[in-house]
Image (cartoon, rainbow, N blue to C red):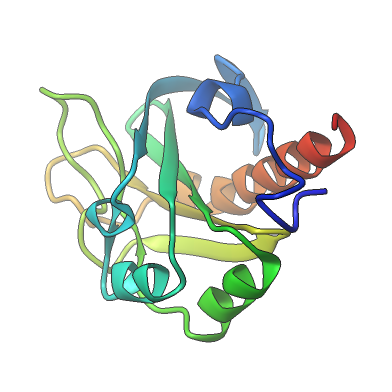
Length: 166
């Protein structure tokens, strides 16, 4: 169901895909800080990822950030039309999704250098970027880095559940 836009017709919103206000990951409680949906995918990426997504017709990038103390993880979901496009993004993958924070917060992971994950399922590429919200932007953060794969697994599970709800 989630391999094609033709069969995956449920609305796509950050709250619809990743609705939890808090999550337990890596033995810590993570609180949703902010979310956004960007129709121009490259604006939510760095390190050349935007070019890879654009070449495959990326429709939008959904991002949700969770924090625990100074640690932050942003989950990104690139929305494409087909599984073949998502597979092509994975084959040419470079760069990362940018960390997302609300206005007035210290930005983080807006350039390459932070820990990240990337994978695909169906027509989606799901990504995480993990770092600290302390000044410096790309400072390594062991707590966030350890949590990144857990958030990626949650994103995958939510996308697969989306397919079973059709």
